[in-house]
Amino acid sequence: MMHLAAHLPWPRVKALADGGAVALVPIGSTEAHGPHLPLNVDVVIAEEVCRRASALVAGAFDTLVFPAVAYSLTDFAAPFAGTVSLSADAARALLTGVLEGLARSGFTRLAVVNKEPKRFPPEPIRSPGMMVANAAIRRKDDLEDAARRVDPLTGFVARLPRRLGFKLGPR
Image 1 (cartoon, one colour):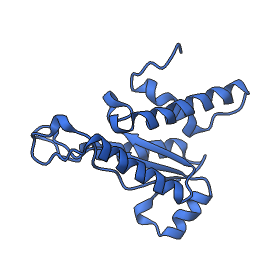
Image 2: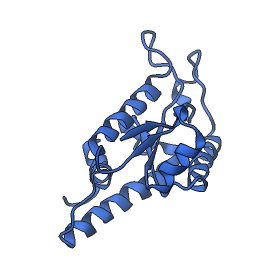
Image 3: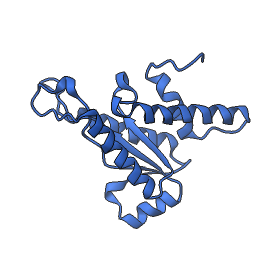
């Protein structure tokens, strides 16, 4: 079942963390997307991906969608009014702080969700993001090799880079 962290009191969040819920953190940029779209397009899409991913794993385990990280590195859109670009170091520190805070809260399963397929994972978190994807791919392969069922979230994360057009090996 999907839960929205911003709408829950902390004891319920703790109970979900203790119960093994997956913390989903949508990330996006506050940036111009042409004269016809709002500045929060990336964030809205990442939040919707969280909702859809939660629906895919419903019944297998709980998901807890945290408020979006709405600022990142977005230099290419900097000339347009309303675009807020952080330095790579600031964006990395912001996301690292959020993830460390969730880990301190007891979450052992975390997923960063970004809508940008051209930059998967986004540049400021490329290494940690690829570590998550690679860990899911290894876990899926290990479970399949042991003839065990692959849990829905592991399967989803393991397939995500390919779905976005990235070639990660011979398969």
